[in-house]
Image (cartoon, rainbow, N blue to C red; front, side, top):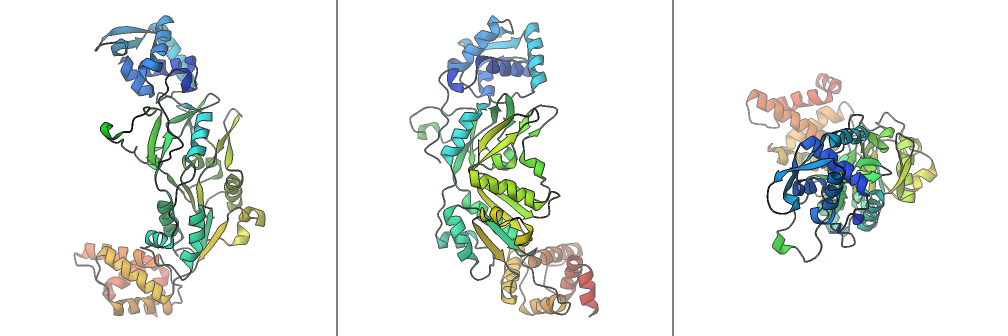
Length: 433
């Protein structure tokens, strides 16, 4: 956990970094949508303390006749039940027309930027033993760990090249999981020049890390409820990505923006997998992402034309089947400090991969069956070996065995059916040879 940054609960309205009116609009929208809430419930929904902050907001709403009390559920002003008045309903609809955000109070962009810089890159234990353990499930060629090590040790950008099916994605995923250690704070949303940008994404950041029991918490300020503590993120981008996705995306219904992936990956790892499969030209992606590496920030464009600058504190990993000349000019590629090529496996490496795949699926390994597979489906039709093939073939074999209600085995019959399913026309050619 980073010691430089801790989002302490604000002790006054001024410490929220927002004015009274934006807080009043958000409180009014939440009350309008919910119907009726106690002051404490409203404070919890907004992620702000009632006594230090929300009390002033509620006083303002009552003074302006936007809300009224409807009873009490305990002691103190925070226990009063509040609901919007007719005048407040009109004001709430006006605020909802601008945007329909009713979540925890956004943090100012300046505070988010400070937090990203303070939390920095993931700390890495980069010795050879730790890296080999992280890649332990993979069978890699000689020298690959030696090439990957410096990129991991320096927490630098990395380009992994190789033909399809030779483990680029598997290596990238393993490295990302190894690098993204520890926890960081992420805001639910950011206020960027009046625009609401959603940052926390449960599908990418995962669930909040549970707090320790109160008796184990060190003495000090409470955490700001506008922030959520998560494991350092790993954001995977694939063939579905388009270049416009690197800008904030506007939800036409809520009128709120979603932060682009490079922002959600801040303080973690951003993986662009299989560069060259996307609809947009690979040169454009690489130019945009390598610019992030060079200046360590990005300028985000909104629909109305305004632009804001956000930092980029992340580790970039790019995988591609393309050659260097297809990716861009020398200056662009130079910004990616480390480059590693993954070749096709040797027969011995294929054997190790196949054996591991058998163990994972509970299929008894048979040396003679592997020799049959290699001769019939690789040597005879002159098909190159690929690291991804064993898992694909065995998955199909297990499916065939399940359908036939027999135990999976490396029998010639099951292998032939699985290989024909996987290789398609190549399998037909091999079978007729």
